[in-house]
Length: 385
Ligand code: NAI
Image 1 (tube, helix red, strand yellow):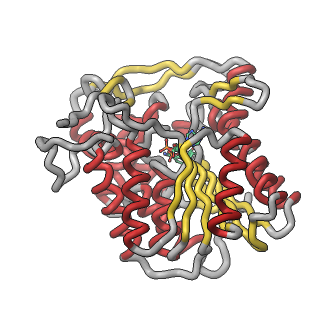
Image 2 (cartoon, protein in one colour):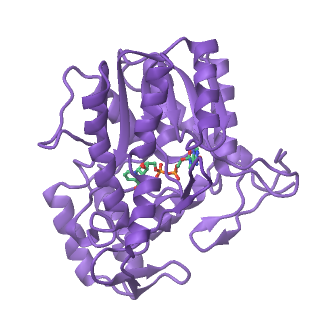
Image 3 (tube, protein in one colour):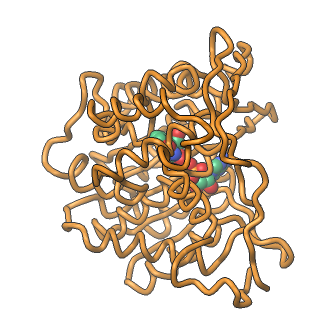
């Protein structure tokens, strides 16, 4: 069937298998071209199928030559509806990795559940022995607990309602958006879903099953951003969850001998998770404009390749005063932020196309679903199964 993009709000409900494959192939090419580093050889990636997790998996495999086991939560095609992009990305990654002599297996299911943790442990025992790196890159809307309780994650501010300029993605105009303040329950839900409790559970489960190698490392991803987005992010519900994630990294370091946990603060990038956050897309598109003009723009694969080659496996690990790796170092550069703020003050519906990288944003958005990728023939029938 011929597959076309169908955009609904901040999501595209179709995905193109060939486009997703090409996207993965390009990321692999980028990783292959990087300087080879001595990195972990058996890597578990939780949230492996899109965004930062997929780029981490590709970096582990193609910069370090690692065998990888991935966990994801994606929908298969039913023959009429396409699969989700993460499913196609993962099938493509597995195919490339196997061609290149690397072990790559993926488990599709709820990473929060005990069943999936048990299945991962069994797979490690049978196929890998032990893992020496665990990448925790989940971005989930909800979490179901063992007793059936469901927690929802929300994207709200804390304290007062917050109103700021926003980009109306439907007609490329500037409007105002108000983000309501979260209730205590919504904050708690977001912390349960996007905080570090499940990360600690994973490390505990792997450690007690003796499938974690000595001196294993584990990394989870966070975001801080500029003051402008603090009410939405850093001081929002998601920021509270990221505080919990940070505390969880300390807990892992204190509680588990022979495991070193890191938080890497990454750059703001268009992914399925981040495009759902209000106000943020306008910041992204201005940031892209400024960083591209300075030739320092990076996507997920460039960020993760830099994490591997310059931060985690380049001798000692450079961290900030709180012990976090700062991959947002270029985004947060003084010159970058002052230009972004200057544009933020001036931007309106008349000049948005000139002052913000609207095309770059949309290109990243469609690329995530395998669309608008050069070299892919979208008029051809493709097998969506
Ligand atoms: P994404 O939406 O591209 O990826 C999420 C991954 O989690 C996918 O592989 C998905 O299948 C998996 N997943 C979701 N629910 C699951 C479940 N219940 N069980 C198993 N797998 C599940 O998101 P993105 O943006 O790559 O986010 C990854 C991490 O990076 C998050 O912690 C996010 O907060 C963080 N981050 C993202 C930034 C951004 O601008 N996109 C910036 C800095 C940090």
